[in-house]
Length: 181
Image (cartoon, rainbow, N blue to C red; front, top):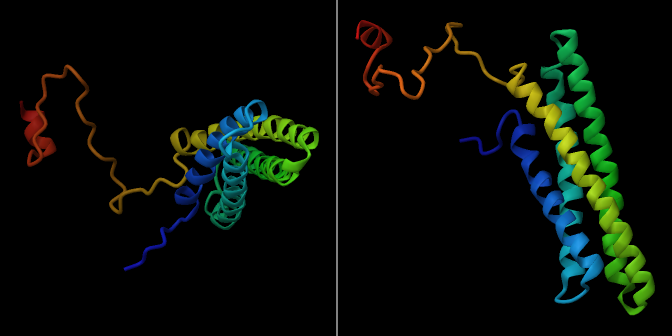
């Protein structure tokens, strides 16, 4: 039993997405309201998000060879996705460092506020970068079928009837049974 998914990239990318988006929201809140360990929570989320972004970039580079061959439009989209992923990594490292500095500088309120403001702006930029990266990754999967396995027979799966269709779908029904109705 293998517990590590193959390819790894699709399983890894969702962690930094959630951590960086949530970290950005908490960092922005922590820039204005420095109570209840909010700056420490922002720093923790952003540091974990940056580590997750690093893992996503690494797994994407190792799994990316599977997608390099294809239409020129798809290759350009892979390059754009990779570029935005690296931007996300760089910006998230900056946001995490600023948030951590805000926590460490707690004894000096002015310095802590400046670091928190930098963390808020950088984490908002990281959140936007996550959006751009995810948009291109989603286009690769949903428009170009990147990473989607094709059935061994090569035949397309039968289409399911849409909502409001008069065809009934039974788990034991064969395609020919539905066509006969």
